[in-house]
Amino acid sequence: MTDDFREQMIAFLPRLSRFAYSLTGSADQRDDLVQETCARALAHRDQLQPGTRLESWMFRIAQNLWLDGRRAEKYRGEPMDVETAGALMAQDGRAVVESRLALAEVIKGLDKLSPEHRVLISLVCVDGLSYKEASDVLGLPTGTVMSRLARARLALHEAINRAPGSKATSKPESRRGRTDR
Image 1 (cartoon, rainbow, N blue to C red):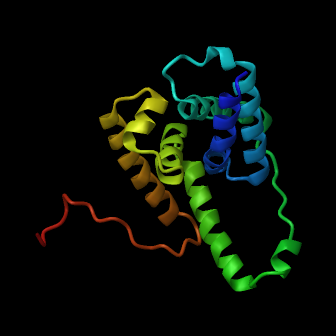
Image 2: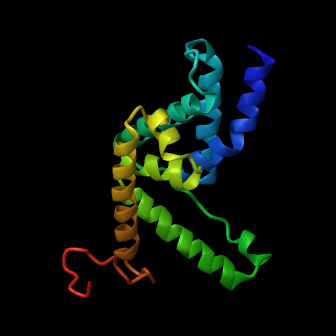
């Protein structure tokens, strides 16, 4: 293994971590996914094709590991994530609670999306990849990524607004039914 490969991999870890968190919604599961992704990348470094960007390859490994885990959850059930109350005591309670409630709504909305939509939201909206970069990672045409991402954003918006107890009540207007233009 070359030092250049190691350096690129280390430099990529923060982005991989954000991507993994957006997929899993849990810091513990994020760490597990990042660790497994790095272990797979190191074990199968010889499979990295010349001309393939390391980031794209590792995003794909993480995506596949996450999808495999989601399939396995159907048989095992979801893991329980216990939050500790002690972390709230040292911070402004109201701001923390409001932020966590908003984040919880987004995470619940992401959970309602199809895996394909969740991966697109994670790559483009969380990690900040361009449509072209996301299309390279997923092996899809750029136009397909753009149209699927638009549907993913709309589905996320609807999932958040339809969530019980959601503060967000506005729904995007349909362009077909508008007469005020």
